[in-house]
Length: 257
Image (cartoon, rainbow, N blue to C red; front, side, top):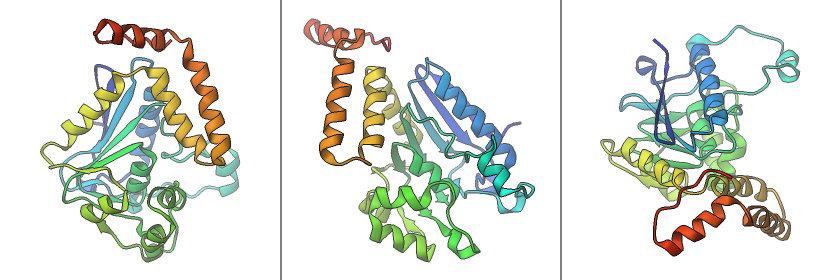
């Protein structure tokens, strides 16, 4: 049996980390399965959005499984070879990802969540990047995405102490968008994903790319890029269909063209 569950309903995929006995920590087998799942989501045109969650109610993911570390390898070989990307860097970059955090999100688990576009969490969820406590640093985007998400000072507080924050504090910081009862968490995430997937696919992907790329640009350049992308989308079939459906008071039929 695999350690990553995968299912598709309509245009929405659901990915479930499933190593409950290890707080859904990521071992080499899980990493390999995640890479395959990320590729499937990225390349399957029928999938327009995805939900990422953990099995059970104790943890989303405790991050890398320190008890099952992969064999040591030359860092130069890894950095300049085919295996350079982490399991987080390999996540889909074009399609919206919603993270349903059902418990502890620590280390690489929080880094997966940070790489998602929307995060919602159960009331008992706890968040942390504790790598500094074991003599290392977050190595899958944590030191970069956390400050961009919650601001430098609050991020430094978490990164330098390695301490956890609870769901209420995570909501205050902007680390998550909502707190949802554990019984409703997955259904709420999937409902959000289906609402997003019902929108024009090219527009959804364009917005995600603009937010990601525009954040690194001066505002005037970012706005010019936005205007350029608006022009690219102006004459697409989906934009014409969206306006026609609005006029005819019906649900649009988007095809991603």
